[in-house]
Length: 464
Ligand code: C2O
Ligand code: CU
Ligand code: CU
Image 1 (spheres, rainbow, N blue to C red):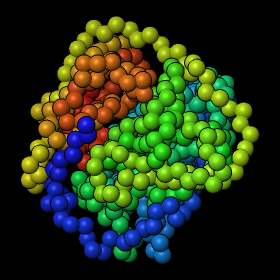
Image 2 (cartoon, protein in one colour; image 1 turned 120 degrees about the vertical axis):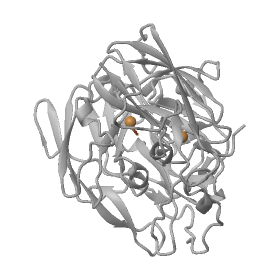
Image 3 (cartoon, rainbow, N blue to C red; image 1 turned 90 degrees about the horizontal axis):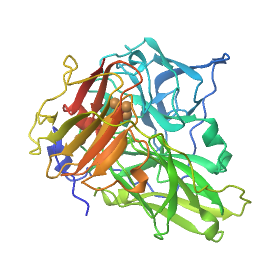
Image 4 (tube, rainbow, N blue to C red; image 1 turned 60 degrees about the horizontal axis):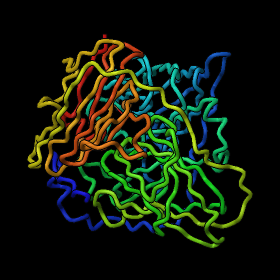
């Protein structure tokens, strides 16, 4: 059973108020879905692709007839897709033309600490900074987003996120749907006023009643009656999705945060907490041309409008030479763990102003090292959500981990691959297997409900 999320945090009072009478009505399934453009490198060498990205405000039509100010990478909402290859370096010059400090974090990536986009390591308004990504890891659906201390929640909500598709030869050699049949679905939500302005308040998920896919409200997507690969990202800061097809039929999950699963997994639903990704193959060949199929959300309760995500309209037939192989990948056997640690996530659930959120009873202090790790070690991290109501999740920078157990049982196949973010409903416990054998330095772990991170649910680890 799903639990009702707690109404907590500084703006709990605001979140309990009835929805404002000024909320505009945005029709569902009325606009076509678009796909973010792929960014071309500004130059390339034999080893490296160089990009330039400008963070700036832009106006987009989301509420019909009005323009919404959004914060963007390169004027795109969501940001442009960067396509990278394992073993080939990417260098991105990020220019901050916003009037707030920003920090760009490549989520899921193994990166040296000076390019990790940590909360205190910000780019001042008008300044620029160059991030270097070695891409020394296997294919994975990475994404980048703002991480400026105490501001990431609002910045990401206003639009500062984008996908970064890291591929490799092994993945490319598979006969999976490709080209225009390989499509990102970047989920976010928003609360708009009648003038089309995005309203931001902390912990306001009960009023964020508009679901956006690739920046468009409840779009429709015209598909051919064949297989598609969808790379789904939950880029909301506070919404847990459980995606299902309206007819209850199954689809195939082929990947998660850290890339492909070992074997495809046929399922009727996929659960995504904020920051998590799922790679799925959906076969529309079982539908007649003319079929309309809604993608539903039956995740944690929210406004009723958020129970719909988008609609697939089957409009034509097409040939299909793609297939999903029985074996997608062989994951390396992880070393044996020699260190055990426990992390307890808890937040004040009374909703009083000044409510805080803790890991092991401490709120985030960027000047404190919470966890000291010996380089090369493999550890078991037991993470518990000690709240009665509030959901959390847990994300580590720098590493991809394995989930050994969820509530004492083996994980479901959809989360048995490499992960960097794990969902934790109230009362849940997971055991993670993590190896720290890449870069040294100070990195973060935190709840990826950005509001909770801003309330203190974030810690530091130093790998030495
Ligand atoms: Cu996407 Cu520190 O996170
Ligand atoms: Cu991250
Ligand atoms: Cu949390």
